[in-house]
Every structure is written in structure tokens, then in C-alpha cells.
Image (cartoon, rainbow, N blue to C red; front, side, top):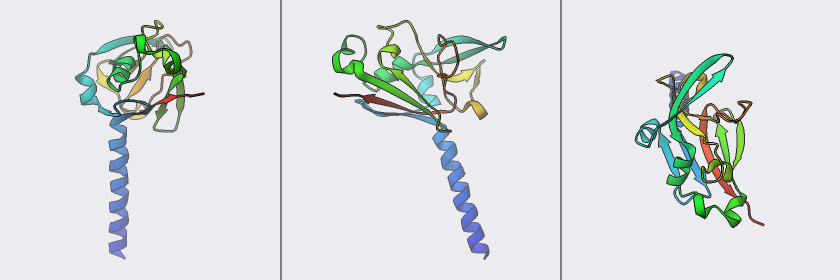
Length: 162
């Protein structure tokens, strides 16, 4: 009887640790040349950027890495490579709770449009945590904040072909 309880508690503890570890990294996969698993330490080594947002009269300063820099590291077409069939590509960003949003690859490329999106890991100088998750997309030029995905865990690149 005690053995079953300890086994069940052990399995539960392992599941909790696995879920926490999943939150501590972000996967970049799909139609990419180089799939990535990025941690906050990985992002800290990349060129840093910052955006300021206002929500209900409160300013938040997010810091992280421009999403296009992460996509470049994964080998996603950008700049002069983003033409023809590559323009039929999109990015699906997914949160831990299953929330998903879509961006076209062109709207993520600063050579196409002036709409830089931040993959944030800090807010007001402190690491993101709790209900924010460890990572968040910040889309400062979107009027509603619906595509600023909190609890971000996965980025999938998809190329549509016809």
C-alpha cells in the first residue's frame, strides 16, 4: 500500500518537474533549417532589445531578443530570401495553455515591414514568471494585445505549398 503511494507521489513529482522544465525553454521547429531549444541563458547571449508598452495606464518595459533574430538563427528565410514560395509561410506561436496565434513570415521581417516583435524574458528588469510564463511575445504595434502571447513555449514555422 505504501509502495503504491510512494510510486504515485514519485510519478506526480516527476510530472511537475517535467512541466516546469518545459516552461523554462522555448522550442523553434517546423520548416526551419535548424530546430532550436532556447533557454533564458541562450537568449541572454543574443543581441538584446527592449520595448515599452502601456496597459491601463501602466508602463511595462520588456527586454528580450527580436523574434526575427531567433528566426534567423533557425534558418528561416528573411530579407532577399523571403520571396516566391517563402512568402506563403507563417509562424504559429503556442502558449503552455494551448493559446495560439499566427503571423505571416513577411510581417516578422524588418526588411518587409516596420513591426518588430520581441521574444521577451524580462519585464521591468525582472525575469518573467508565474501567469506570464518564462517567455512572452510582445507585439507593441498591435492595437489589441491579443497576439502578445504569454506563457510562450513553442514556435512552429509552416510553409504552405500549392
